[in-house]
Length: 225
Image 1 (cartoon, rainbow, N blue to C red):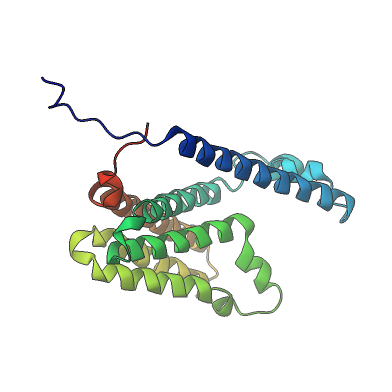
Image 2 (spheres, rainbow, N blue to C red; image 1 turned 90 degrees about the horizontal axis):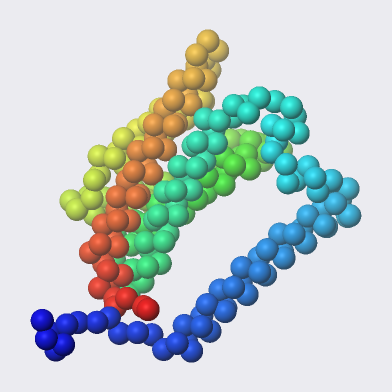
């Protein structure tokens, strides 16, 4: 094969690449310093032993390691879906405000909110202040509605049944939670529906993220290096 027939990806200017890398390193260090400084403030100002902030909750409470494992698995899948969707949304910036990118944004924000909520138990903490749970969950419902609306516009080119399964499962989980049912196994049913809903949503977000990266502007850009 002749040299003319060979194609090479254009290389980015070394100076610009190094400046970008240096900026990323500085940002990582600043975030690290901010987190570590917050530990010092919590310890010195609020009297919260930093040792309690860096240890596993089960280790502190001397609980078995399997306590909360299903909840933790759900959180992992929430964040996986959120990361995939938001990364694909950012990577396809050159595509503009397409329906698929709007779906990625709405889905990524919803999954991120749900993951953070489950991790920090936010809506449970707010509910103890006397605010009805329905009101506390309003932001979640708005983002889920936005996701469904955006997903409807791209239903013909996306695995829509995965999203339908997710919404149906999470709806049944919410209904089970709100229903005045006090029988053995009710919590298991609620959490089972929730886990299935999380898995369906994560699979949907990963699938459309792959689709966006494969067919969007990110896959058409020249490689850097």
